[in-house]
Figure 1 (cartoon, rainbow, N blue to C red):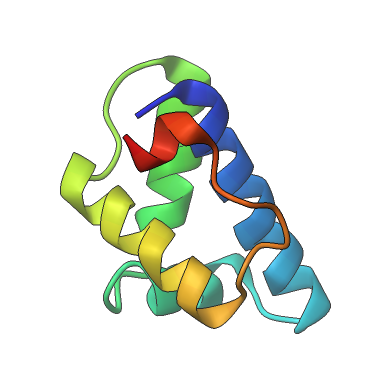
Figure 2 (figure 1 turned 180 degrees about the vertical axis):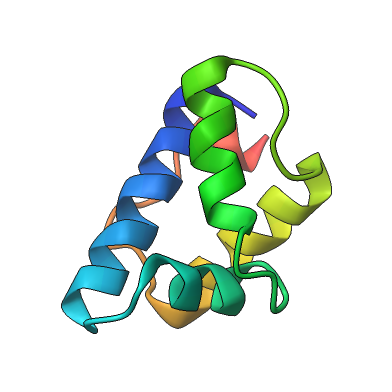
Length: 81
């Protein structure tokens, strides 16, 4: 998974939280199967370059975000491959 795609996911998740007046832990629970710290761990891992939630948890969280708040952009050809 590309770093840019992960950062876009984080930005969209945080924007959704702001729009709905949710705490970071609330959006994290919704996206990371009840884990209130998954999004925070991902953000910290992006800053540090290591660690974070398991890769599959991030992919599932991205799919859940798309279900909750579909993006207006069409998926890139690279994402479809």
